View (cartoon, rainbow, N blue to C red):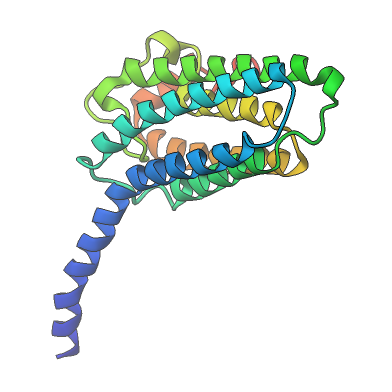
Length: 234
């Protein structure tokens, strides 16, 4: 009787977990947009120099466009399976990223002096645009092969374009985007969260490559393209 009850409930629990796994990228994206809008509204009620305001406004508009781009990927993710190889790293990275945005927009810049702010903020804006280009190109080149979850290689291994330079342009792009955001709203908490996020992503890449390295095609690709995120560094 006990075995019968267990077998009856197990498929339901598995189906629920599978649905939540498919929905989580979209849910995190929606929450991020709503949260970003609320905190941004509060942040821009604070008086600041016009040049500072314009740079920060440019960042916010760019980031909203980036979130719209991500929402399309999240919708496509609902049609795919997988997630068992992630070890919850996607959710962990999403929570830390939202915490990073909260610390940036909630606290603002507290570490860069007014005299140096424009230079640091423009550098941050440039890194954000670099990240959007890198991630956007990586996602576009992979097309339907791209996904938020860690999955085995299918029939095709794409190794051209930006993937001939670094193996994980999507992670690389996301790092540059949020490093740029951190520089524009630099405080001790945003610094902590950008490094915490990077640590989770490095763990995620190691998990992903442990799976991918089971395929001889990927091992050969890794020899041809030794850098994961940053050319010449790692």
